[in-house]
Image (cartoon, one colour):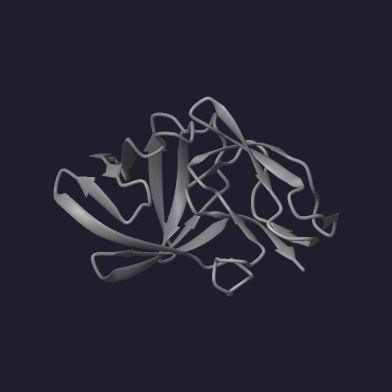
Length: 165
């Protein structure tokens, strides 16, 4: 289960999301430890949050590309997301974290935890908007962790893997 800190209009929530598969449209997330039922029309990666139902209430949601805000029928809301399970806490530039450049579906994984990799080596394929994006190792080292599975839907900037030099 992915564990995120979501800050919406200054209020923070701990949100735990199960690994999502493209063919599953109903699932339970935990918000501050409380179960919340979520249903989406589809999870194809490109528009996973266009329309969803949360505990029986429908929501139409739009967001900016960087997920810095969401827009609902109640207005525009600033959002901050933080992955609480990311092992690496160093700054994003130059570290070994491999993040999703866009929302999408993990189509394949070419490495395993503990495997040595070279800079530029293909790690996984992220499918988005009917295109396959090959994500490569940002540095030479060892695969420290994989945070995703094949068939899982991921959000932009979600940590997918970590390479340790």
